[in-house]
Image (cartoon, rainbow, N blue to C red; front, top):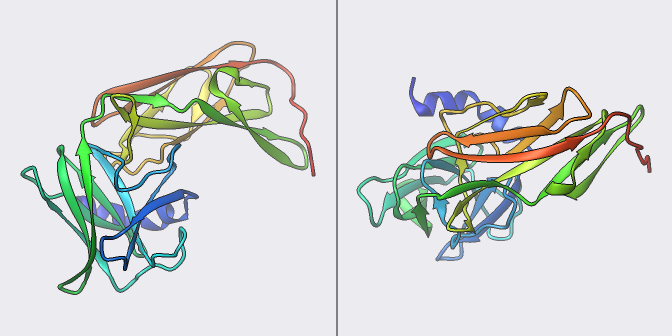
Length: 247
């Protein structure tokens, strides 16, 4: 089955995922190329894209925010400026496309109206050197009638029996954060995870971790399958319930 047919079949599910959006207005000032994903840091056209990842791009009006003001009449294409292979572009939602980069190089993304180029941006793809967890985590506490969440330093996470942690992965090249969604698989003992391997590299960079036993550490491992990079994090847990503040 082709990449296009599989991606189209899951487009509605992907489109409903809550994601942040950074982006770049094109050279002609007519289109905002919005980069959709759960990135820990803001990204723009100067941010390198990790090879063997997919960049989710929405074509929007220059003043738009995510999921608003899309150019449904336009479509996206890509071409290699350096390197031998054009990026692979395929639809993933309304006015949204996945762009897969198979090798390092410089590329141009072009918003097209029929056969006419409307606007464009230039991106650089590089081979990532590391996959790490962001230094902050979101701890979600569930109560009988409500829940709350807080941002906690990753090293200070200590989960009670009614808590889970949301971690964010960051591809890096020589310490510099990158964009692009790698094919991820996550695992570890004494916990359940929301991430599964995706051969189409559209797995979000956030990872929900729910411990299944308490009073011991939980080691979380996430692997970028395309680049053979692994990130690890250790989360503390304890028995008992955490208080919930219902406002």
